[in-house]
Image (cartoon, rainbow, N blue to C red):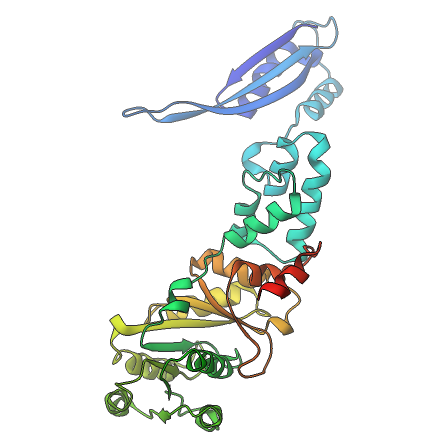
Length: 361
């Protein structure tokens, strides 16, 4: 069989040249996209190579009918790599024997609602090796950072940020108790004088665990409150939940936070696991307009079908995870974030993994 190679600047141009020279006798065998050139003074140029063969004795001089052209175009219509989805790229690059594994990978990613850039990152150059599921889980989880530094050496002022209903106040109480039990001298400072019962709630937690607390109503109260707790190891700062449209309240919180010593202050964004990644990103972009976020805390793991939305957001924001909560119990339903803890909440990875995690955490 005679093979013919046609090289042009694009797939369309190569196809046009092939049709003009060989007509309906030509069949496309394979296609390759690549670049040439490049250097200090030259730009890279895209090229397309079609490898074809002649299926009959017809020559380019014969009349080509509309039906011949339709048949030729149907056979030559291989997908342009630039337009392929991550899934299509995976399927076309791998031999047929691996397609079953690739479909399994897609099912797991769908099951865990892993989307966007995180999904693309997981699929890129993925090689399952001897243990497909272990490799897949490892690549997903290793894509998200763990804030071990903040866990071990928290800054003196820990500001908790997040929308109303995110579990911010309860999570703060859990973490304050955790560090108190570990031997730190802690206090709680509330900046939320707007929500009815907000300070009463945090004070009830504080009193139950013998932790001193105070309420800041306006900017004039900040410095005296910081002086009150100047000898404490860690001061946990609760804030009001913000609506993106409440400009006055946003300005109020911005003014209060600006009075803290940034060098000794860490800010954590509370992220409910049952909220979509794009909504978490919207909140994040709002807060970083006036405060630098250092790490994330994922809450409500017990109320979510999947942790994938949070992981997708964490990857796209580039922020590490400090803590995870999975219930209302104070201080019981709290875990320091780790690879194993996050892996526990991915679906489709049981295979004896959960019992191991339960023994280690």
